[in-house]
Amino acid sequence: MDGEFGSFIKVWVIAITCLCYCYYIASKIPKGFLRLLSIIPVIYIFLILPLNLSSPSSCSITCFLLVWLGTFKLLLFSFNQGPLVLSHPNIAHFISIASLPIELKQQHPPTQKTTTPEVEKPKWHMLLKVLLLTLILCVYSYKERLPPQFIIVLYCCHVYLSAEITFALCAVAVRTIFGCEIEPQFNKPYLCTSLQDFWGRRWNLTVTHILRPTVYDPVRRISTQFVGPTCAKSAAMLTTFLVSGLMHELIYYYVSRAPPTWEVTCYFVLHGVCTAAEVVVKKVMLRRGWRLPRAMSGPLVVAFVVITGRWLFFAQILRNGVNRKAIREYAVLLVFVKSKLPLHLLEHQILSILMVRNLSLMQ
Image (cartoon, rainbow, N blue to C red; front, side, top):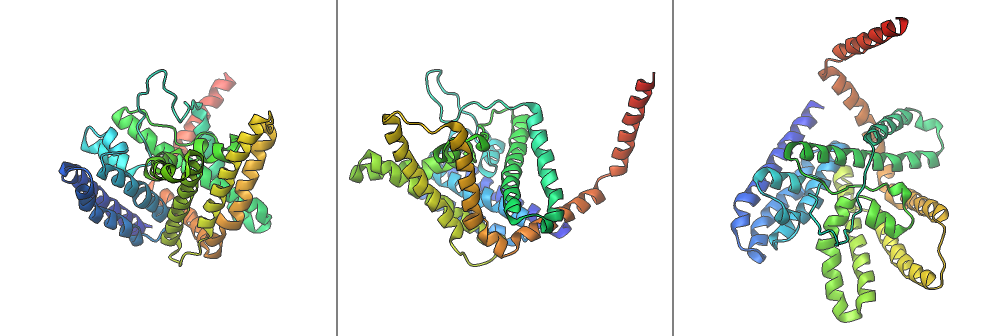
C-alpha cells in the first residue's frame, strides 16, 4: 500500500507539472494546429502515466481523469474551446478543472434553458450513499453464498455509488477552496424514464458535458450537410456512444493489462443503437398520443442497463479477476487506514459522548 501510494503521488505530480506547462506556455501559442502540436507531448504523458499504477482503484480513477477527461479537455483547449477556456482565472483553477471530474457552473440568462436541471439534494443524502457503499463492501464477504444475479446488482450499485461519492468529494473540495459553484455530476439515474434520459440527463453528466463538444456537436454539424438533421442527430449519437465505449475499453486495458475483447465497446454501441431507436419510437408514439407510464418505463430501463451490463459491461472484469482484486484492495485499505489514524482517540471520544448522553438521560 505504501509503494502504490508513492507511485500515485508521483504520477499526479507529473500530471500537475504538465498542466502547469499547458497553462504558462501552451496557452500563449495561437489556438489551432500549433497549440495542439504543443499539447501532444502532454497527451502522450497522460497516456503512459496510468501504467505506473497496479491498483485497480488508483489506476482506473487516474485513467479516467487524465486519459479521458484531461485529454479531451486539452483537445478542446487547443482550439480555444471547452471548460479550460471558459473558466481559468489562475493556475489553481486551471489544474482543478483539467484534472478533476468537475465543471464550473456558467451563468445563464434567466430565459435560457439549461441542459442540466438544478438538483437540490438533502445534506443527509450523501451520507446515506456512503453508508450504502459501506454495506455493499461488507456484503462482499459473503458473496460466495449469494446468487450471481444479486452480485451483479451489487456491482452496479457499487459503480454508481463509488463514482458519485468520489465526484462529490472533488466538487466539495473545489467549492470550499475557490467558492465556485459546480455543475451537477449525477442526477438520480435510478429515476430515469428512458435510455435517452438515463445517458443524457442523469448518468455521469461530467462525461456528457465533455463528449458533447468533442464528439456529438462536430459529428452532427458535419453529418447534417450530407444526410439531413434527423439522420445527423442519430449518427452523432451513435458516434458518441462508440467513443465512450472505446474509452471504457482503454480503461479496462489499464486496469487488467489484458488485450481488449471489445465487449464493453459493444455494450455502449448497443445502448447507442437502442437510444437512437428509442428517440424515433418516442416521436411516433407522442404524435399518436401514446405514452408509456413512468412506473413501467423506469424499471424497464434500469433492468435493461443491469442485464446488458452483466452480459457485456462486467464480462471482462469478471473474467480477469479484477473484481476480486478490487475487493481485496478495499480490505487492505481498511487495515492501512486503521494503522495510520489514531482510532483509539476516536473510540475515547465516542465513549465520552455516550457517557454524557447516559448521564443526561438519568437526570
